[in-house]
Length: 479
Image (cartoon, rainbow, N blue to C red; front, side, top):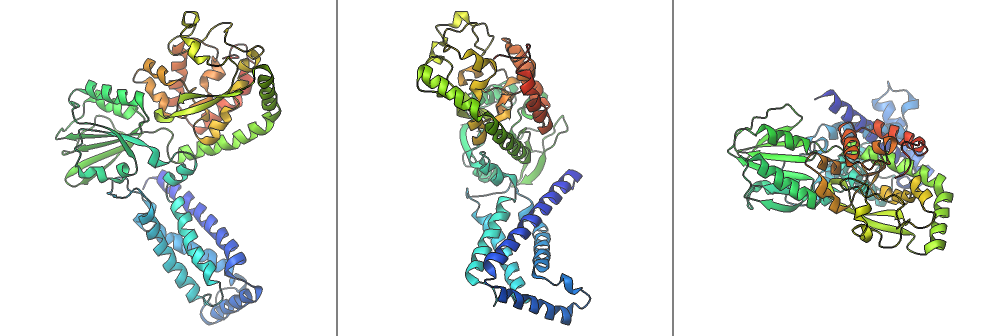
């Protein structure tokens, strides 16, 4: 096992050990042991066992809390030694879109262990049976939630069951449609007529679907091909999505990259996940977004209230508008903004097209006639974007990322720039701290691709810290 995986497992083990230990302390003290008299009896039983079997152990260690900690530790060691808990096999067969089987396996292991524990140390007659029954169900649920990043991501706004996939040249009755990686996701398109020897066909098909809808996983059946075209291989790797390749023969790849290969039912399966913000990286980014957003909301309440009141007095409702924008992996969401323009201003874009100074999907007009009186200041310092903190809390946006654009703007995206949809859109980004008032689409392209190629939590933090200073810079202020 690689050092990075060992570290990941070790950190998760320590986290679960701490969480379950403190939860067990709390539950035993408040529910399982109904009175101090019973606790004294348990301590007396432990002292008696110590004198009979563990004489070498100091009496100061013979406490119920110590035994609970030791039990949790041994249980987790046993659980981590099993494959079914430590390893979620996306390439195994699964007929159900639920987690019941996984929960039930953990439940049986935990129930057996805890019953042996309370019986062996003579707790069974001194604890509440009703609360013990509840305890048997709660702990497996905690273990299931923290078993892998899928369920945790669900609570942060990215459930695996909302992800979509397409298939290329995969028969409708193929047994591989029962793989867990597909069972838990929704198939949105199937194509049996793509010529895999012509990489342009593959490019065009994936690009077409990618521009129309939310796409997370691509499943390709190469049948008896033995080698992937170099350009097609590079394209699939750089898509920054989950890719599953099925082939009768063992495919030869031109590049070395992180992937998983298994042989199943006579076929070779190659799976690689180049989704930039997925799993633990996504969860950590969301945690940072939520924490910093809470701080921003706290400090901007007076400003937000003032802007709301001003727009209400000036032009009544709606004060906050919702616009359809393209989010992570092409998912459409409602983006919130303070209304600084007249109602239906977006529909007036066609009538004002000749005044547009922006390039590509950018639409910018000097002295825009659609603006409400006095709202230029809000836009100059991006204060009209404050309601987008709602989108951040909902998981539709991040504090840092490429600015979300309209769905019709994706027609301007070439294959490489479609990668901007593979990271969460944000309130600020490299563009905003460097040249936010540019009307050149090529500048947007440059900074968005640079952000995607170099994304890290540290980069996000640097951009967040630099954003307030950039708002007052003559080079960057303004939209």
